[in-house]
Length: 439
Image 1 (spheres, rainbow, N blue to C red):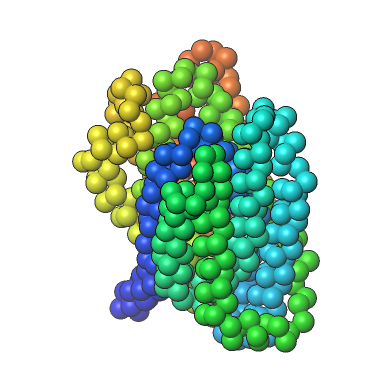
Image 2 (image 1 turned 90 degrees about the vertical axis):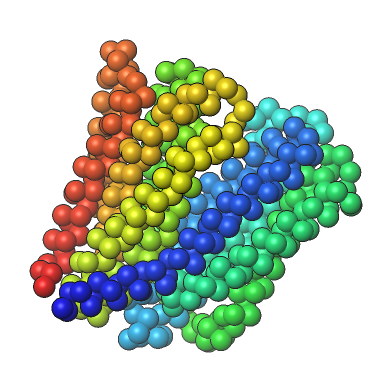
C-alpha cells in the first residue's frame, strides 16, 4: 500500500514537472518549421547563413549551459531546509551564466569573421551578411544564458508552467516580428537580419517576463553574498566534458563511419535520426526532472521514492516513445516527405526507419541512468565510464570497417549494446548508493 501511494505521488511529481516542458519543446519544433519556411523564401544564402550560425549557437548553448544542471542538482537538496544556501546557489548560477554569456558575445565579435572566412570559405557580401547575423544573434546567447538560470529556478521550484507560457508568447512574437521584417521592412539579403532581429527581440521579451515572474526571488538573491561560483564551475567540468565528448566527438566519429558506407546511407540515417528525435523529446524532459527530484528525495531520506524515481521516469519515457513511434510509422510518408523530396533517400529511410526507432529506444535507458547518477554527484564516474565504453565501441566499429564488414544495421546494434551496457553499470551504481530496499 505504501509503495503504491509512493508510485502515484512520484508520477504526479514527475508529470507536473515534465509535461509543460514536453509541450513547450513540441511547440518549439513547430516554431522551428515555421521559421525555416520564412528563411527558405528569402534566398539560398539566407538558408546557409542561418543554418551555420544557428547550429553553432545551439552547440555553444548546449555546452555552455550544461553547467546549469549543477544548480538543479545542488539547490534541490537545500531548497526546503536552507533558503540561504538555495539563493546562494541561484545567485552564483546567475552570475556564472551571465559572465559566460558576455564572454561568448565578445568572442563572436572578435573571431566570427575569421572563422566564416577561413573555415567555411564564405566571402564577399555573403560574409558580411553571415557576420552581421552572427553579431546580432550573439546577444540571444547572452539572454539565453541568463534565462537558463531563471528557468532552472522555476524547475527546482516545480513551476514549469511559467516556462511554457513564456515560451509560447515569445515564439508568437518571434514569428510575427520576423515575418514583418522579412516581408515589409528589409530588402534583398538584408532580410535574413530581420530573422535575427525578431529572434533577439523575442528572447529579451522572454527575459523580461522571467524578471517579472521571479522578481521576489531575484530581489532576495541580490541581498545574499554569492559564494558558490567556483564550486559550480568545478562541478560543471565533468558535465561539460561529457557533453562535448558525447554530443560532438562520439557523434561525429559515428557519422564519419556511416559516411564511408555511402551518401545514400548517410542521408537516410541523418533524416531518420531527425524524425526519431521528435519521439525522444519527452525523454530529455523526464530526465530533467531527475536532476531536481533525486536531490529532493535523498535530502529528505526518502530512499524508496529515490529508488522508484528512475524506474518511473524510464517507464513514462518508453510509454511516450511507443505512442509517438506508432503515430510516426502510421504517418511515415508525410514525415519523410516533409524533410526530403529525393526519392532514393525516401526509399532508404522507409527501409531503415523501423530499425532506427527500435535501436534508438536503448538511448532512453542510457539517458535516464546517466541523469540519475549525475544527480547523486557522480558526474566524474559517469564521464569515465562513458569514455571507456564509447572508446571500446568505436574501436570495434573501426576494426569491422577495416575488415570491410560494417553495415548500418551493425552500427545500430553496436550503439544499442553500448547504451545497454552503460545503463546496466549506471543503474547498478545508482541502486547501490540508494541502498535501502524498496518495500
